[in-house]
Length: 193
Length: 214
Image (cartoon, rainbow over all chains, first blue to last red; front, side, top):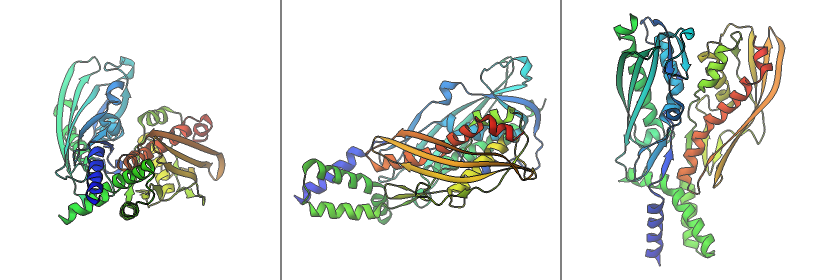
């Protein structure tokens, strides 16, 4: 009987594994701060994320056979906007990839995000490793390509760190990615022409 | 190995506790002392402490504020109303959800409003227009099927010391919840910023509030 109970509990754990747990990729906004000593680019830009992309759900592996689920574009939209305001003097949002000339937009920036996650733990579901790849596809207001910038940021954390914040690994990754993108955009000569 | 045991107890205690509860209910085995005893131990192990995600403004509100004809304002620290509906920390099936800002949800609300105004370019520490208020209701309910969050706050705008706006705003949010604690608790945790975003959206949709900031 005792063995049956033990096996029953193990079966219950096994059955309930493989779940998708909700996490958020939003980094701490206060950490997306401007590069000290670098002059912002004097240009009016708009970022463009189509609605279907903005609401896209992504599921990647966590630990113990479980998965994590999140909305990368929705989660990162505000931090992405803040990063752009650290790079350009005027930033807005556009609902079309080719905004009208009256909007006076010099560049349209379309983000593309891909993510991976993993954990070697058999018993905890939050990922211990998370990587965010971010590409900014930059065009002019008529849709003509200007440049494309890609960066990648890793996040890692252990149980003792993420036990109070189950999204910590992902948030470290997105924070690193956005700050790398900020530096890369500021260093792109083509954007200062 | 020890770490794995702690991890196991921490993460799966809710799975096991709820499985046992379900089994006892299903089979009517109220005399299963050993199982109930194990459930109590596991429940005790699972009383963990979590931190709510940091606030992130909603871009639609930021753009709305940015384009609105309002002058920069400053935000003073919100107060907490002493009420059982104003939970701090928020209890989520035995776990405690703490605010990442000064460990109070009134500070979370203060930070949310500051971030919204700052990103919209409408925040100034030296402004004579000041937004303050009181957090009156604040709670999350991790029901089995659908979670529900409730928040209510009184917002007061003063211009050179004169009250220009004084209203109570509230918001609710729902999300798919679960019988399994390891699903329901993270889902509720992630819903908290959304709840505050909805409160902010309600406030910024009020023409009287925007009028008071002019």
